[in-house]
Length: 411
Image (cartoon, rainbow, N blue to C red; front, side):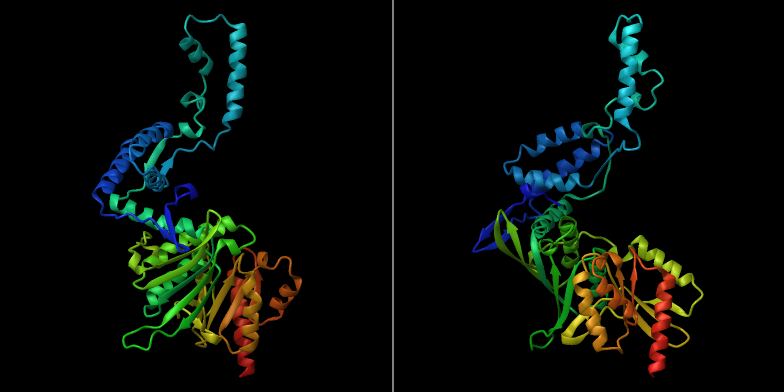
């Protein structure tokens, strides 16, 4: 992702227009190829040497902001050695103290090289470099493979992501005709734990048009705490929209103290660089799946529907769905993590108005740590519970049993 100083964006009539490049431009492809080759061929070299060599290629370009931006995207793919396992400042102090004693008390050798060998004798760590912990002395250990055209495509996407770091809200519309793609998009939303309100909207009254889902995703400017982290997560989510056949976004962003509108859709040609995200399962979710399905219970985690339709066409995207093989009952579970506190009371109101709903909700205690009244309301609502960091499988099973028993008694 780019930094603010590397952002290239034109403005006209209050509209922000990212300065996209043509990924097929021969000169830019040649420049990207040169950079990729330089970093690849210098694996094992010091960071300072690699950056110095790269600077010669970058500074030769007329548009320095562009060339430095492309290098920033490539640099983010590099891996450097880390020396955090050792306390280098303490090791250096001990070495310098010992060297001073040697200098005062021993007969000095004829050359400084011999003195250095005597001072460093027995040092296993500092022998590899007295200042190996400084950033400029880190070694380039690898770089994730990328093709020149792909590097330019990622640069274009990063221009938008950088703008979204300063947005207050994103309004997006996506087609609702592909359940698999919907699951994937909302998997990204859940993964990045974004604040999102979704509703089903009717398309145009023309033949062959599909219904749309309108998303309103809160931006970092609307978050009171950890806005920087939230902004990074929002920006990281954006490429997921670019893989859809039909999408468009609108947002207000603040650039150099000016509030501008950003509007984009699938005609922008932006590409999603996330590969096989559908196969990736966060460790906490994988552990929950494995632990729950190992329990001796008739409940099992299943794939059910991509979303639940509520009042006023609002949509909810559950984190988990469960099926009871003995009774055939099915329930959905929605989890509220930090940043989601504003939606909890609203969801409780919906459950109170519709006790027949199959939805259960779990709330991270961090969301309600300063609201005792809301905590008590959650505890008093059937199918609602509190957890810390991530819910335990036994607690979820108990909530499922209790909810099913309540429904059975009502019937």
